[in-house]
Length: 259
Length: 128
Image: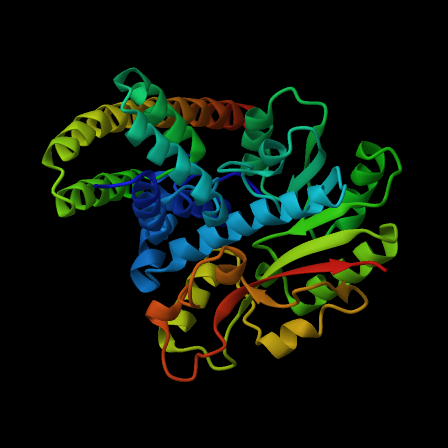
């Protein structure tokens, strides 16, 4: 993908929603349009980023010191190498501008590598991981804020291939968005906007999401709302935009293990 | 009279109620530690540490709206307990905290914008 600062970019929009400075006017305008449609979309971005913090610390407490982060975006606003400066980290993203700026942010840090690759080109990422982690395949893997940007085939293949490749005991932290089978008009518009930016969101129900977990084993506490992980009351992340029949709309976080 | 437990509770509940105004670097489960630091700072009443407190709160990821909400809640709590003098003293102290916080925030945003522009410029030149 070419670098085009005149077009909004999902990664830079996300940075803006998190309160970051790494975005252009075109991204901020696009983000504000999304906020007008779904006022609580900023909350979702924060809950996701906070879940990353929770995930990295939980995995570190279990002894993990090697992190493979998929479709990383800009590693700002509290990212893995900031949370755990002693860890070996491999980031990746498909966007050339994101990768260039991310490398600038990371600086000269041999423990952290930012690799340019699309998550659909997993073999390239795994080859880099083999090198960076010196052949150690028992990894902590993070897919936070990613799963809903992958179509069924890519999501399924990615999780399957990661399972085959990594060593037993590896864990993966994933966040998900569950949406009703028939999204309300506001949600439909949101989905259409992301599609127009070239980053379609794939709406799945909780039951559909659960089908992607095998062969990984779901760890306790299972499917838990991001609001619960973050000890915030209620399921109101997108409640403000909720309409009748949307009761399953929410964001979830899970940990899975290769047994 | 307001006790250390009271002020800690007021700060903690205010921070929790405003948690979504904080940065992505500050998950709500970590707020209780910051509430204790603010509570201790208010009880110590050391004006010399107000600037440091402002910088620390910014670096920890507290949002300006959260901080302003804490100022309001602390004032309200002191006044509710009839402690007008402490309300005034704490306001003066927190004013310095906010000034320091905002100074660091502005400096950070300027620095980030400069770095971003430089990197984008380099990228555009490298792509011809």
